[in-house]
Amino acid sequence: MYLYHFGIKELPFTLTPNTSYFFGLPSHNEAIEVLLTALKTGEGFIKVTGEVGTGKTLICRKLLNELPDNFVAAYIPNPYLTPSELRRAVANELNVELTEMSDQQEFTQRIQQKLIDFHRQNKGVVLIIDESQALPVESIEALRLFTNLETESRKLLQVVLFGQPELNEKLNLPELRQLKQRVTFSYNLKLMDTDQLYQYVKHRMHVAGYQGEEIFDLHCCKMLFKASKGTPRIVNILCHKSLMLAYGEGQNKVSSAHVKHAIEDTESAVKLNLKPLLVLSSLVITCLLLVLLYFIFFRAL
Image 1 (cartoon, rainbow, N blue to C red):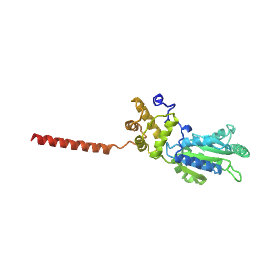
Image 2 (image 1 turned 90 degrees about the vertical axis):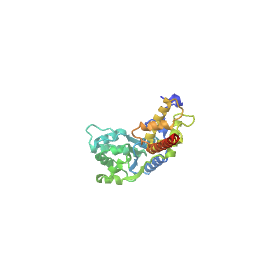
Image 3 (image 1 turned 180 degrees about the vertical axis):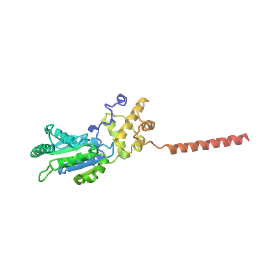
Image 4 (image 1 turned 135 degrees about the vertical axis):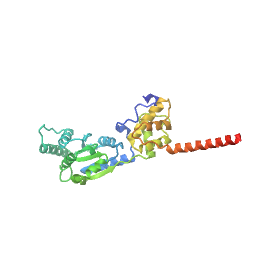
């Protein structure tokens, strides 16, 4: 595509949550710090929420990579599961063998024994669930029962929930009030501001191997911010399209026109309001025409 043109080794603005491109936005760093602190103190439920495209899955992957050695992680990326399916998914992640006919009681006994074994090895177990707003209410209640497994001083299983704001709405349901009370640490991801977006774009280009002069100047980044509201995923889409447009024209720098076309081509982007400029231009043209007609009229006299 445009790799050779810009002298980069890989696409810098893909939507895959690649931890090598982790920028360390203040909001992301704070979330990871909260998570690691909560896990070390042995809390039962920890919650991280954020709008679509704010980097929840990236933080989730980053957490998995940075968990201390004394933790065993179970990761469930697709939580739209019945209570039975959720139990089996957890068992599978922890290498707990279950028969096809295993019921809830047998599962509880086997998973508890596995957790006790890890505890004897001085290891904590953390269950990380991405997109947890998709968990059915019945499965969330089953999840709460998992965390009843504990010693006198520590939970045998800790749960980290990553989800969209709809997760908060679901936890506000009366039937889930017991679980909501067990959420001891929570964090809500924030969007980027203009300066953070500017640094974010430069960072991703640098990680991709770019070493030349600035491709996205501050003016372009201000346009990106207005169109994306600071959402990383939308920024990635717009930057990728802008680079394609610049490459198509043989340009070594992204222009405001490239960004504008990228915005117009992206449904999730906020379209820039150019109406005031058009109105102003129309007024200027009208005034110039009136002046021109004035001189033509009086010259004719």
